[in-house]
Amino acid sequence: MRILVQKFGGTSLSTDEARAFVVRHIERERQRQHQLVVVVSAMGRRGDPYATDTLLSLLPNHSAGLPARERDMLLGCGEIISAAMLCGLLHAHSIPAVALTGGAAGIITDSQFGRARIVEIRTDRMLQSLQDGHVLIVTGFQGMTEAGEMTTLGRGGSDTSATAIGAALKAERVDIYTDVNGILTADPRIVKDARALSVVGYTEICNMARQGAKVIHPRAVEIAQQARIPLRVRSTFSEDEGTLVTDSLDFNQRAAVRDRHVTGVAHVSGVTQITVHAQDGHNDVQLQVFQAMARHHISVDFINVTPGGAVYTVFDQDAEQAVAVLQAIGYDPAVVTGCAKISVIGGGMNGVPGIMAKIVEALTESGIQILQSADSNTTIWVLVHENFMVDALRALHAKFSLHE
Ligand code: ADP
Ligand code: MG
Image (cartoon, rainbow, N blue to C red; front, side, top):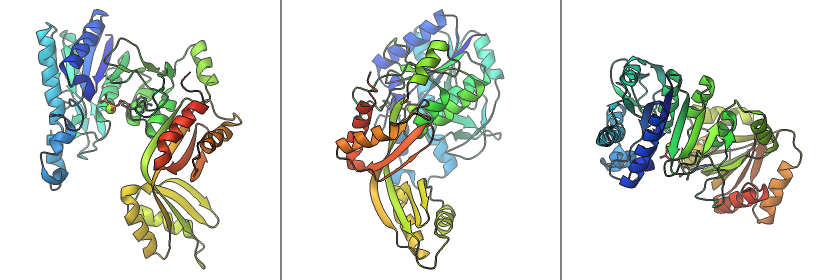
């Protein structure tokens, strides 16, 4: 069997025009003798009638008080509507199709409602539909517990459904269709001349996704990497093949990837920088601080520890609590809210001199202060005030000539 998984995101299903493109991509791959599993998200984005956020807003206070189990029943509706709607559309085009919920398709999860993990995929039902010659439509973002309760997979869930199904069915490839031409060197909403990458490795994309590039969820990339299934991220609205994500590169592709020191820039906004200095008599400040954060389940990032104290970041919404916790154990932290973490990512930057110098140059030339920095062998991070985030991304993108 030559199985291909196609995943269509929210904007790819939200208008008649978009849906006509979706049908065309399905028809084309059928003509190429692929057996198709089509994974769908809820239609549209916040504010659109069946989008996930809109369903939640049916309840006051963004569904406060709704138990997690029933919340998942509500959340899962958007994908069910998409799947049934697309099934009808394919039938109207004389394409035989069946639609299955995540549970009916055999996606078995644990019972952490709202952020369930897939524990097993039972493929019998899916394989049967494919053997019958149907295009199989599966609701993304959804699974089912052993006991038959509907669960949802959390953020980026439909991407995860698609690659997990691809892995379970040993698909030839998983195509992620979205509203941009692939994985770009930066978020095109911010950097207008961001360019689509033609080929990238899994680790690099996983890094970009973890550092804020919202085009694909990192968990989905990890699953594809483990199963060694190539991914394509491409636009629903064109025939352009977009970005191929794979580790099996030919010689020329390998050279191109190696010579590219910096692959892209990504950002996360809404973070607060906290600086704690050791008080007289406290010589275990780092231990005390991070244990206190852990006790209160406050997630910390961008940690720099020095002999005199520690500096780190938390999400803005956790800042108030973090400060209270620190004050309660006798510290007087300095706090800068409204920061953005900018990441310069490149699998080929390891050991290349001058990358940090160029980053500092780009930001200094634009009058942007660096509040903190750190690096690994594939990423350099800088923290800046959120007001400078857009300028910083554009300056870095230009400095590394990423538009070329
Ligand atoms: P979908 O509903 O299809 O899953 P998403 O909104 O999840 O779509 O992802 C696509 C969006 O990701 C794009 O519209 C783009 O604004 C954003 N994005 C952020 N960073 C990047 C990047 N590096 N490359 C491509 N798109 C990006
Ligand atoms: Mg998405």
